[in-house]
Amino acid sequence: MHKGKELSLNIRFCILSVLAVSLISVTITALLLTRYYGQKQYQTIGNICNGIIEARPDSRLLLAEVLKEHKEAPDMAAENNILPAFGYQPADFWDPSYISLFSGIGFAAGALLFILALWYRHKKELSRIKALTHYLGKVNTGAQGLLLETADDEYSRLQDEIYKTVTSLYQTRDEALKAKNNFADNLFNIAHQLKTPITAISLSNQMMLEHPSGIYPKQIKQQLHRLTRFEETLLLLSRIDAGTLVLERKEVDLFTVLTLAADHLQELFRQAKVSIDIPEMGAVSVMADLEWTMEAVINLFKNCMEHTPKLKTVHGTYEQNPLYAQILIWDEGPGFDKEDIPHLFERFYRGKNAKEGGIGIGLPLAKAIIEMQNGVISAGNTAEHHACFEIRIYSH
Image 1: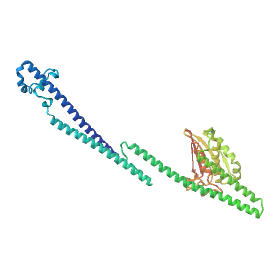
Image 2: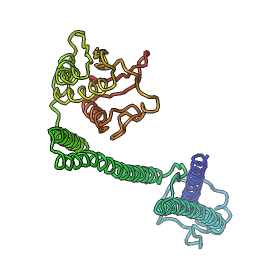
Image 3: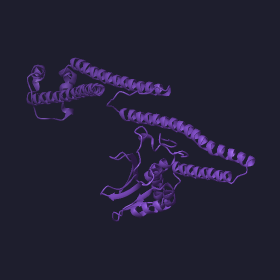
Image 4: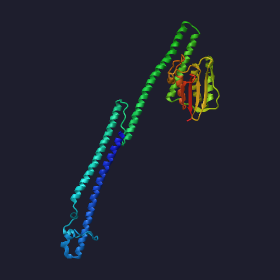
């Protein structure tokens, strides 16, 4: 509705401008043409008089009557015109008062319309500037959800750029607030994750001093290993966030990725009494970093292993279509809780069935690595209600 209104106002301005210019042009043209034909008429009558005198020199007194009747005569030189001798001037043959009056009225009307159009235009410009200034004033006070009226004039581009800039600033502010909140949450989670092993080390050290035993050094070593692994993962995530982790993407075979990841976890699978099944399904290659892709797959295999009952199996398959290569990893455990699925890849999130001692950054790390290689990762439950991870690495 506002756009139609602005368009109508611009049409009005154009109509007023055209009318004003037309009136002024017509008035000036009428004045020039009237003067021109007055001069022609004056010259013509002069030629007529010269012709009469040459024919009958004694007819000079009758010329005043003949002047009104004769219309046309051959052109003669202006210096031979006899009308000035009789006291005639060009103005004597056309009345400039009426022409000047109407021309003046027309010129004044055209000038008035033009001034009115300029005033109207100036008023609309001031209105648009005032609206933009008012909008920016509200933005500076923190008001949100304000939309400028849609218009169709020379300020439209400026309005669009202002709106884009304001929208971008809102988004930047929201992202900054979100990052600040995430930083506070991550700092709290990091402190919590550090507190647990440090407390365990402190207690083990105290117990070892009071009751020397071989078990306490082993417990301290386990907690130190946990701290080291936690530190390495945090440093890796910080490199990913900062964009300083460089991946060497080249053609790698998915069966090789899955088997190498399984080999790294062979001892853990043996201790958990869980088997792993990776059938060979042909050659499927993707452009990826072998080591880091394998790191992501290791985290997924490990998560499935930790939730798979003894003597059960973790499965890994792969396939390819024209759009992407797909990896499926699933277990034979109880599956994900429905409330946990939307949060599985959030940092430091631990589901209801999370294994004791977990940190909650393995899955977020896997997600970050896959997404850096033009891929996506998702989690859900199979038709048999087992936990399942799906990786898609796109060709383009």
